Length: 463
Image (cartoon, rainbow, N blue to C red):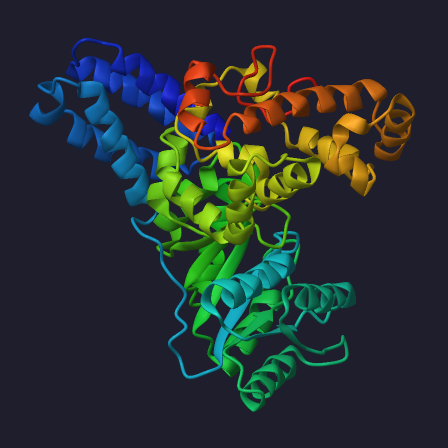
């Protein structure tokens, strides 16, 4: 997410940080490079211009020029300005209305609006304990109605049935009345999208909006369209009283122009950000955390929240107790850990939130590939229950069956088993409080991976 912008900004700031003292000239040279980085990231020109002007006004002063660590002070100024441009704080949904609170989803076709509707329902249900009803007013695409009906079941939300013969206003008002009858907390109305902005679409969504008077009108936009996303959001905002924006497909957006342009151009906050295709891949948008990620400072707060939300603490306690007693850590335990890792966004999802990850060499980043985890899980799932419990008993003939069942090779199976054996040895050293002894023996290196790839889960470094 925002990899290109992050790489450019950090390269520029690193060069400046290495200088003993700052002058007005080298600050201006640095700001010129930052401006270029912003424009290459498809940040809207007026936004990039005001961004640089604001930084320059703060940077060319005694606080920075006379600082003992001027580079660090400048980094803080850039960070604070990134936060300022994106909105300063997370703007939460307004759910304080008399139930049901009505949320209207707007956006162009292909922006991920229908999927985002379901993701939002899941987030409201699981994080806020709300009961949610979904309805589709997209009468032009029957497949979109069917898609939302299926997604509603997936996330455990109610669904108001509709079809292409119905009027969008009748669908929206009918859904709200149903929610009232069932005493539900929230209604989310998905509307029709188009391939471009047109008068017909705007007239229809205005009619729906006027009829239901939603507490939230969210514009869903593909972040990969860059400053076009901001311009489209501006056009919608002129036609509808938007309350916020949802940026989708941010995991595939290496530039970041949309995130940095939308708030300044529309005046509306980014409330959520989509970070993947999975139904749980929707996060509240925290400008300070995103700014820290862009500047490669990490996002430990979000990472801790991911752990608290996704890790099964009861299972983790059982595993810790099992290891402490010296019982064997088997492949059932390992695949459980991999599945929990998957819930947190996989290896790359976690790494993106750690400080300094942008400075890792490309050769290392190429090893941190979640596809390798998929292959490892496929190998383990191709084993019989007894083989997972006692992997040391797996014979050559068994390995051939496991390799065929997982679509891998016998060498892959051997590699995983060898690495896992090393991990079991490490786990045994933890018996009876031997953690400190084990850590001293590791001499600062991670226990598994080999081949210069310390820190990789067993079996990953050679896959």
